[in-house]
Length: 184
Image 1: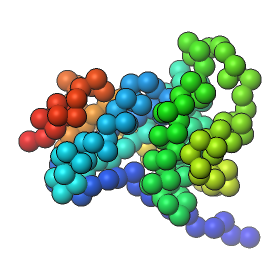
Image 2: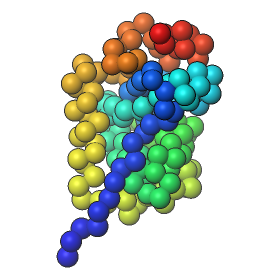
Image 3: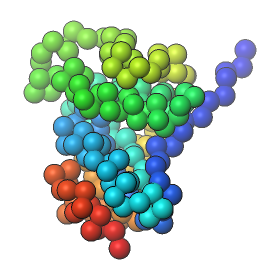
């Protein structure tokens, strides 16, 4: 029996000439801060002036990072595509304590299974993604995100790139207006 074809919808919003790439780890508090600003960035900069691409940057000290990244990319294969993935990212960011260990090593999430994490994400996001999570070769999309980050020297989140250049002086603590000032 042949596997069903699937496609991960790219996590891209806007269609402008300036490429704003942000590398995010879903449970990182600083990545969450950046994620919450992306809609404002698109609105203020103008979707005809900027293209925002979210790149997922799994980090091993965030113990469930790999599972959650896979959930986001699984959601992107569903009918709602990138909007489903965005709903998952926002659900995790809004409830990040339920997807992370205390001090990266202890707490109630220590007893949580991947299936319980998927169920939590489904409950918070309203996106049914367990079946998509089980796509056997979904890891090729995960690897694509990872490879792209490594090729660009990205190792931490959040990291920002504008028009292919890493912006070492940008942070999640900056205002949207400060981010916009980096666009030439």
